[in-house]
Length: 279
Ligand code: BEZ
Ligand code: FE
Image (cartoon, rainbow, N blue to C red; front, side):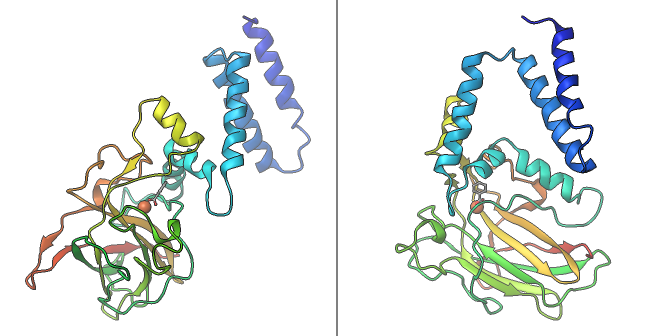
């Protein structure tokens, strides 16, 4: 193997080529990435064959990606990097703020507005009917009116409407709810079921070759938006769902897990109160 000193010299030389970068931040990010790539190659004593396999892997990620399939996001999700970036961007740990989690690839703009309590189920579905209710407050406990709750969920066949154009109605299990003057909201849907993330590409291959699963626990996605508050992208997880301890994309936060129980009206329901941070 090459001498450590020569490897250090190479890295120093590469980094020095960025000395005159006109952008200090771009320089910082580029040089950090280079330092870590060099450290990675040195740590595993990367062979030519392995490096070429890595290049082919990334090439395949590019080839399978298009407007609706984004393999690099899947790679970022399954390596925990998406969750890491979320954790760096939004810290709810030392406050009453609702925890955030990954956006995922199945959100689509233009969901229909839904009335308070309306069901977002459009197509026939055998799933258990559920209600998710809550109050949206600021950190001082004041209710927030007019929060948009952009919701999306998979059907009992495990697919999201965006994955099955022509099979599911475009608006199935999608909808935008609005909080009322007292901060309350009410969503009717079906009980979310676990589903496999797309595993027919290089990111899925890597999971399988490493003996990892490619499933997510059942969840409802909520993206809360209001002009005076920071966006919150989160999930409601079902406590009875499989894979809560092995989410393929590391999106589970204990604080987001809920129990669905029959309410006074006999509906299977859960409460998910939300606390938003001022913008
Ligand atoms: C999702 O929850 O929709 C999702 C998140 C990350 C990767 C795949 C799917
Ligand atoms: Fe999802």
